[in-house]
Length: 76
Image (cartoon, rainbow, N blue to C red; front, side, top):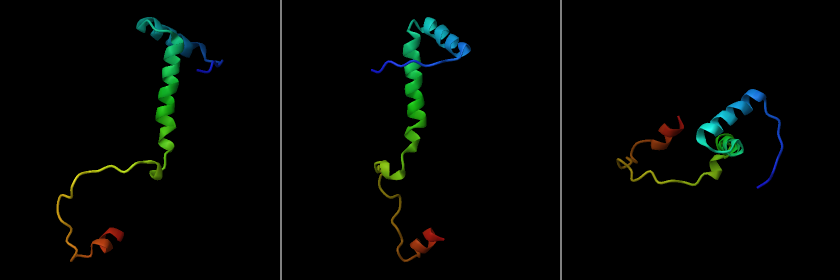
């Protein structure tokens, strides 16, 4: 784990201190969790479609009727 120093506004830090007292946990732990949440919500969305693994959605609900112009319908 890397130790860092950062400047935080007094009202924000006060909120973390109050919450840390309510939860009986250190404010630094709450700040670390907040940073991890931020990374998950903001950085994970940068994945491209190529980065996602395919998933199975199950079997087809109905057979494809190849007599119809299926591809033409999809492209229009």
